[in-house]
Every structure is written in structure tokens, then in C-alpha cells.
Amino acid sequence: MPAPSAHDDTPSPDDHTPPSDDAAAGRPRRLSRRARRVLRDLHQRTWELEFLMSGALAVALGQLPGRIDDGYNRVFPLLGEGLGLLATMGYQYLKLIVYTLILTFVVHIGLRAFWVSLIGLDSVFPRGIRWNRTRYGPISVAYLRRHLPSVRELIVRTDGIASVLFAAAFQLVAVFLLSIVLVTAVTAPLLLLEHFGVRVPLVGPILATTAITIAGLLTLPRALDRFLGHRIAPDGRVARWIRLSHAVNLRVFGHAVYGPAQQTLASQIGGRRAGGLIAVVVFGVVAVFMVRDVLIQRERLRLSPLTFVPAIPGAAGVDPRYYESQWLDGPPSLPVPSIPADALDDESAWLRLFVPFRATADPEAMAVICPALEPLSRTGLRMVRPERGLPSDTLRPRVEQSLDCAQRLWDVRLDENPLPRDAVFATHPITGLPGLSWYIEVRALPTGRHLLTVRRSDAAYRADLLDADGDDPPTRHHHEIPFWR
Image (cartoon, rainbow, N blue to C red; front, side, top):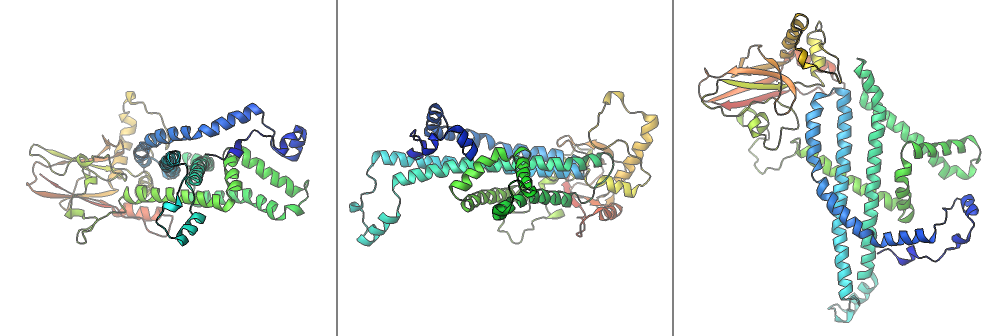
């Protein structure tokens, strides 16, 4: 429980100071007796609200990570480089917010349950430890009586830790939300330029430079005030700059929302301890995100004691990502070529192979491979009116040219024999992604094992090398999909 002195109605010396003097001295205005009584009642019953919120939100938020993953995996392959970067950063921040809240509520429930058990123990045994009945010797008893906290002291400490954890978590969430707003504000002009065909290279370094500049403009005035404030004239330019930075931070960057909790934690438990607590929470949340969403979900981390079994078997194994009938937990996070099943029945006459488009690489590669190719539509959001049909006299030749160029992005083979260029534009029935579909006649194939190979073509890979910004060459995608009939 909070200390009684924190909610005592006894007026403090500051309460006898006239309101005008309080305002002039920069002290908060005096609360009325009724307001102090309401606050005291809220403090005494806050654990009930915390318990209720933690239990309800922990269960509700536990459903969100999978929903967020499904939405991101469905939308990201449709976006270009700029929108894809913005969607990825929004996805990461949103997952960090959800993980922060989930971990906070779970730990908070555990702390409150421990706190309730201590209260019950104290009500049954109010005298606490009876040292004369313990099995320790005199030296141990003397040391433990000096250093071991009592049950009532542990009740107060646990109550304080639970309340501080709640406040620190929501402060961190406010910072994450503010980061999303700032990133969106910085990226919006770049995306607008990209929408009108002006490509902006090095979007990542631009965002990093902008973030460092904003952080410097906000922290440098505070550093000057802290170390050189006694030498700065109160009405000078530097003082006005310091006040302006605080005004911008309050009104634009949301310090009025997370600042009270931040400054309370820093002033009550110490700046280093508050910073350490928040750093531990951030480290835990980021660690969960990296392990679950980056390493495990994207299959970069696997637990296997079988030293002679390859992690990626290729043609020597069956990878469930390539077979739609094996997507029991939904489609894979990274879009890959796919076929309906690994084993075809005797009545199957055709096999559909779907190869999804890569919005971040395929348009640039097609522009290099087919420089005379005319765009069929503008990038970004656009209205589609399917009831009008396709004006064959004007668009059909351009659509066929685009289809022929798109097929040149991939080298597709069946049992080492290249497939003819008879693919069609298609939308995947499960993922909704656009791509190319080859319909392969399998009636004449002998029974047994066959191998589909989908490999980035030489021309497309050369175009990918030209479009690469970094020093590392892009990955040349190569997929081997065995099947049986």
C-alpha cells in the first residue's frame, strides 16, 4: 500500500502560501480538500483497477500479434520501396507496443498476485517472523534481522514496483506512438515524391539524419541549461532558444503526455534508476521481437539436434512453404512460388504454379529488361472499374507486351526442361498477391517424382545488381519444388 503520509490531509507549509505566490514561485496550485480526498480514495483502490485492466488486456492483447503479422504479410508485398519501408517501421513499432503491454500486464499480474499473498500472510501472522523459533544460530539471526525485510516492508515494496512498472510501460508506449507519428511526418514528403515518379535514393540515411537532427535540437538546449544555466542571461537569445525548445517538445513532440510520468519517475527513484528500468523493459521487448518475429518467424533460427539433416534441403526435401495444402497456420511470411499440393491425384490434368511479384524489385527490373515498355497504370492507390471490361483495341497489345516482359524475370523449368512462355497474370486465391501463373499439363508425365525449378533469370539478376544501393549484392532467388503424381 502507498505510505499514509503521501495522502494525509494535514496541510503542508506550502498550503498556507497565497495562490498568487505559488504561481510566482512556480509551485503547483493547492488542491481542495475534496480533491485530496478523491485522490486518496483512488490511491487506496488503484490495485483493483490495475488487476482488472491487467487481466483483461493481457488476454485481449495476446490475440493481436498474429493479426498484425497476417495484415503485414498481406500488405507488404504489394508496396513499393518507400511505402514498404514505412509499413515495416510501423509494423515494428506496433509490435513493440503490443509486446510492451503484454509483458507489462503479465508481470504486473504476477506482482499483484504475490502482493495479495503477502497481505493474506500478514493478516494471518501479523507478528511476522518469530526469530526465537527459527533454526538459525545467533550470528545468522543477527545478520538476517538487520538485512531481511519484513512481510509488511515487502508488501510496500511490491506495491510500489507494480505501480512504477505500470507507469513506465505506458510512458514507453507513448514514446513508441510518438515515434510512429514522427516517422510518418518525415516519410510522407518522400512518398509523395515517389508517387509522382521522383525516386528518392537513400531513404534510410535520410530518416536517420532527420532523427539525429531533431534529437540534437531538443537535447542540446537542455544540456546548455543544465551545465551553463547560471551563466545564461534569463532574457537573452540562448534562454529564449531553451524555452522555445521546451515549447516545441511540449506541443509538437508529446512531452505533455509522457513527460509527467517520466519526470516523476526520474525525480522520485532517481534518473539513473528510472533510465535503467526503462532500458531493461526496452531490451526485453526488443529481444522478444527479434527472436520471435525476425529469427523464428522468418525461419532464421531453428532448434534441431540432427547434425546430418540440412536446414534447407532444397530438392532433397519437401518444404511446406511451397505447398498451399500445407499452410495450416496461414501463408508464409515471405512470399514464395507455390503449387496446390506435393502429391497430385490420378485425375489431375493440370498443375498451377504461382510466382508472386516483388513490388520492391520487379518494376525496376522490367524497366531495365524492356526499356520500351509503357506503364499500364500509375503507382499508389487507384480506382478500378471492372464493369467496364478491357478496351482490347488500345490496351490489349500493351498488356501482352507487359506479360511477355514479366515472364522474362524468371527461368522456370520442369525436370530441367524450360517451360514455354504461356503464363497469365493472376491473383493468388489465398494471399491475394498479384503474380504470374503457369498451367502445366501433367497428364503425359510419368508417375513418380518431378521437380519444378524457379530461378531468377540472368537478365533480371543483372537489373537487380544495378538497382542495389549497398555494397552487398542482392540474393539471387532460387526455388526447387518437388512433387509427385
